[in-house]
Length: 426
Image (cartoon, rainbow, N blue to C red; front, side):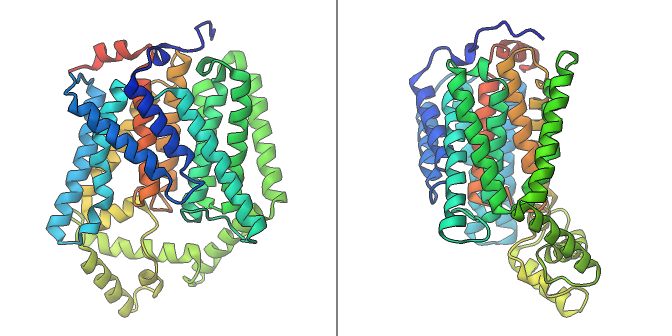
């Protein structure tokens, strides 16, 4: 495929004050995500303020079909959480996460009308990933910690750092079409890939590493063509070689994989007092708990009581009551909010993958980059969510939402926006 288009498409034309505000806010959000203690809140607050100001101007909002569906799903997820809260009589704190989806709606509308500039967005990823690597090195070599946990907890720290590294890699592939000075950006993006990957390794977050085959699959789906099959094959061989060497030579990677195998073997022998064993036991208990109330789920108090009852009966080990949560985003939603809460989240995940996935082979390199990034975000988070509460913690949920609306808003404002609107508008 020939890439004869100009370096920047219509997405970079005509910076508005609100676009600059959104871009600056997004940069601060990602730049401070992993290198500071809740510093990302500044960017989130600025984004919220900008979106409310935008709505206060009473703009004429015109949405395509996909936009309406995504905005509606964000609102429905909030409403499902509110209904569950009222139905079960849970503490008000149970509305913390659902409220983030409501706040995402005005930000989503702002991003559609005034998309972020890709240079600011990627600068945030680069700074955030390098900061993560620096924090990981400081914890490991200055503090003597075995695993880097950052300011967010080890698993979230490692998964988000890896996610930023993946975003930097996606931008690196299309560097010539995204930035005015691609040579400088190549260096910066490579540093971002290195910093994020390094933080991921030192965190020992195995759930993130499981997503790497998916990342490779997405890149191949998007960029593999007859004209570059040899180059892609050579690159994949290089990645696989580096991965094998890393696993066999880096103590952290090797020990974490060995520990995972040992945990599985011990669980088969009846031992649940391990990291993976406790999770397996909780998931086994959920096969009994969830079917009892599949539609509306359990109240938080009743759920704890039921777990204690099952343990007291001898059917399950005490590990079921010791974990703070299920360590699975979707199971947690199902048991506490029922299908009422689970289905809208699954719909957002699936439809986001479909909407971004449609542009994976786009002839517009900027649109393709955004599609790749969107698919990687949703797909990787879905994989991470199998062993961690990625949509049940403030930092990881906000990371997901801000990334999602930023990529989608930018994609809708590429040169292909008008064609999409004409085809799908209601």
